[in-house]
Amino acid sequence: MTPQDASKRTEEVCRLAPVIPVLVIEDAKIARPLAEALVAGGLPALEVTLRTPAALDAIREMAKVNGAHVGVGTLLTPEDVTAAIEAGARFGVSPGATDRILDAVEAADLPTLPGAATASEAMRLLERGYTVQKFFPAEANGGVPALKAIGSPIPQVKFCPTGGVSLKNAPDYLGLSNTLCVGGSWVAPKNLIDAGDWAAIEALAREAAALAR
Image (cartoon, rainbow, N blue to C red; front, side, top):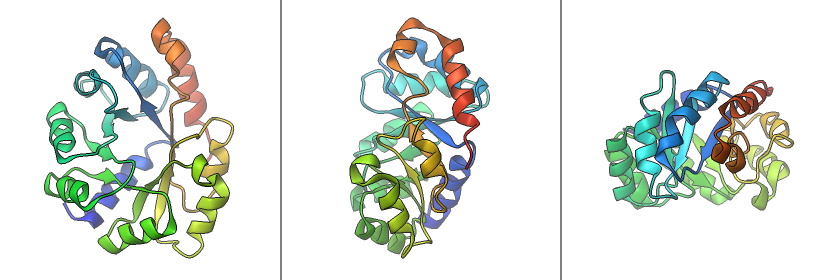
């Protein structure tokens, strides 16, 4: 998969809803009802981060949910890419971008959002052909003003800002011309997951899905 083709595919993912839930799952048993609640609330694109031993099993369970478009986050190595695809991931997300990880996702035909934190990093990815990128960590890197500033000289690149994005500041990001969607964990907080309160999570998803872009 070329970077150009990958960007087309990731743009399609980003346009499914204004928010991509960023999920840290400790127990794969809750993966399916969690995915069902988020999809029912209008958030079909789901990013499961590879931060726990249960992540790959969670992806396998979520991939069975009708309407779910399950991706894998925190891709760091080619081995992560292989494992994610075997688990059923349909797209990838990386906090940064190295030639090694980009070579791996391109060889494996896994459309991926590579991370950029600066104008130079965004330019380097653009030179390779990536016109859709992840801006991470968004708030730590200056937030909305920084992303707006990057967009002025590099309007060809569209972003999914992630990291410190919340219900409060998401509309500000979504109001930028170079933002396709945002990634955030607030739609599936740990306390509601632990309580198995899927109705409350669905309500948060509906609230997020209604945000203007």
